[in-house]
Length: 266
Image (cartoon, rainbow, N blue to C red; front, side, top):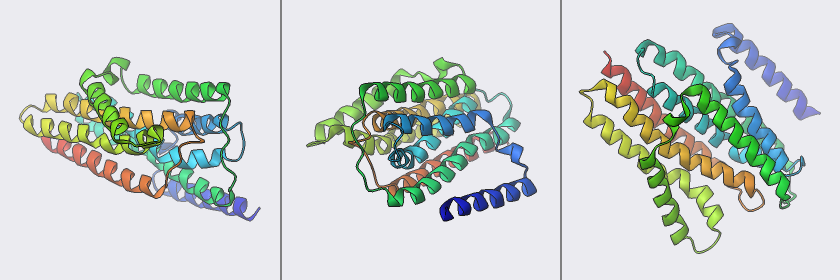
């Protein structure tokens, strides 16, 4: 009861602060809210609507936020005809991160008293959970840009090679190793994209598509990681502190990319 009252009070204070500064409508984006809510539902479906679902939500919330931000960023980079729209559109992409931070903060507190292990889900629970997750990802991609914009052979080959390397060097628990290390390995594709972007600074029109391809590698890696966690929650749980560090690096890279893009139009 005490925790609920404090959460309600905190939400009220936050809503008042946002309404006083920029207005709540700035963050009330349907796609951002749906992209946060549907994975929460999928997490509880995966564990049979037991309270252990809070553990799954706390583990994937930041990664889901990162995926949403990357999808929004790819869509923006594919449509750079209006540089003035980059700022507002990127603000919407960051709203997914805002909701993700709220969710992981709440779930981290609620999960402190959960000591029961996660029981292996039934087959139908795994299938429905993955269906919900896949559905909201496709919906978000469709809204950000055409679906073909999110299909890139080079990025897929990079992810495939990284997957094989991680499986090859993992002595055991390959699924857990993939879920943990594949998102980090995805930074290799991002670095390649940054190098290509810097080599094409004289042609601003080529920067957007090049960086979109780079971000897709990171997107694919995180998509695989979250999918594995929803399909096998009884086998894969991580220390959430590592997610905050990872989120910080992703935000740093993407904000740096946007700074370069804005400067290229000046």
